[in-house]
Amino acid sequence: MPNDFNQPIIDEFRANNGRVGGMFEGARLLLLTTTGARTGAPHTTPLGYLPDGGDRVLVIASAGGSPRHPAWYHNLRANPQVTVESGAFTYEARAVVLEGEERDRSFARAVETEPGWAAYQEKAGDRVIPMVALYENEAPGPPNIRAGSMGEAIRLVHDNFRHELALIREEMRKNTGSPLGAQLRVNCLTFCQGIHNHHTGEDMGLFPFLADRHPEAAPVLARLGEEHERIAALVEELKQVVWTAGEPATAQAEVERLAAELEAHLTYEEEQLIPLLGG
Image (cartoon, rainbow, N blue to C red; front, side, top):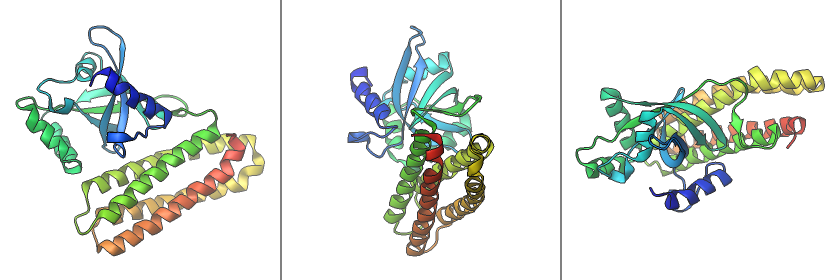
């Protein structure tokens, strides 16, 4: 896409921590910054992505079904080190182009989630649309979040989790039978992996930091540590409901119950931690 089309999307994305309106409202977007293969200059492009669990996400070089690969794809082939902006987070990553059966399986998953990708492949003709995995580079310290304080960072991360829970609820309400939709599974995967990583970071880094500086908060931190174990069990229940299609009304009620408990935890954690962290 030309820059005059992309730039308003980029600006809105950054201003709203990954959320945009218009034709892309509700879409999963990230900003990918590559290094120009010929110019060496940074180029930022909004892209749809597919969560893939673990330590990577997938982007699709569809170029809207063009017979030619997009410029960002040529850039990362020349220099696979890229910068990814995903919601409130920014991180460095390594881009790997998927080949053969791995590419085909990943593209089939993308089509199951959003059939429009198949239409792009048909339009692209003989060009096989590439699938690219983005692996986050290991980095010391906490993640890079666009926030003025650690307290604000907690709130931004929690708001992202609330948004993911809202997407799960919405997909669940749209479900009228089984099997449950691929998009619902993607939403669940994103939330479950995200909150696991978030709690692991708190248990290993944030809570010891706070315990050292606020010994009076020891009872709260102990309770939150116990809640993390309970939340891990609730997340497993959520995954079971989503992946094991049962009677729709029963499954929807169960998702609503689990989401309400998860949101209550997020609220309690904010009430206790933000006063200690500022923001």
